[in-house]
Length: 208
Length: 141
Image (cartoon, rainbow over all chains, first blue to last red; front, side, top):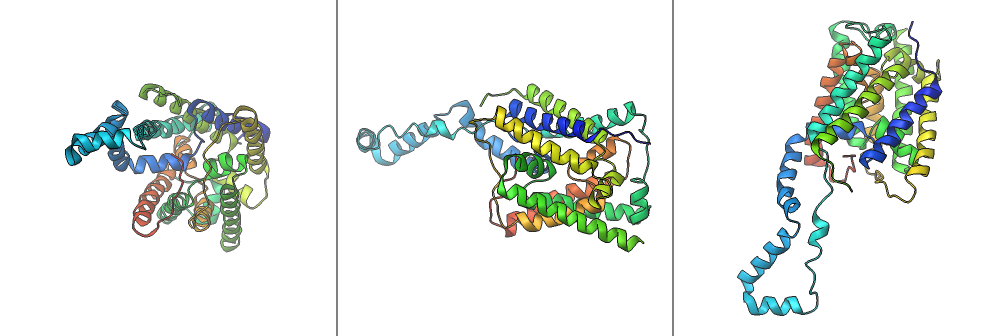
């Protein structure tokens, strides 16, 4: 028999993780965002390469623009425009440099650590066992074997597609969003929870 | 914002991953049976766990993040249909994007199929979004 944490201990742990995540990393916890970062690693790499020169020299863009202006209009006109109204407009180049984003491999580390965390928890609890089913309730509702695996792949596809489309999941919308009363997050959480409740009751009726 | 070195980021994310995976497993969120009992309201423990976590996180943000602006997710045309699709998937697999990984760690090998599905779903949405949708997803980064 599994001995799970009482609800208050689980609440404390999840809240500590959500708040600690924000305190240390200054961004809200969100697992579906990590998925997007990992799956979109090519685009992330392209963006990082494009941003790299700006990181090295924040004024590089301003200098490049100035050089281009000199080449196009000559020194006289350029000096006039620099000393005229709008002079000092070079400063915006400082705001262009974006905050450092976590590399996609960091999110992969995050996922690998989650796997290890689950392994440690199950091992310490004495419940670790390699098995091909998801437990008695799943088997009763959806059966076992290859067709249940197909259903898992289909359901997983909906989870991946749906969370990307909704812009968040249980952690991003549900925990990080609802706790700050973000309207879109509260709506999303209410809808995905209500839908899951409806489908679960339906599955129970159909399996009878 | 402080600049963090790559090694420190791997370490910090790794520690949070460990804590999250461990906690989700000990809470029972990675058990299909437990999650199904929550959805049909035959066991409210997980529901209390989540509601309690939201309240405690709210208090924590009020205390520690006072005066900080934290990015909020915008409402857009994908919020409602996306949430419905996720809800169906959650009921069918017992898994939100983090859970399948924890299930696999617990030795539930069938979760590998869920993971494959999620991977494909995330990839497919990126293709569809780039071609057809024009709203800002505001996805967390």
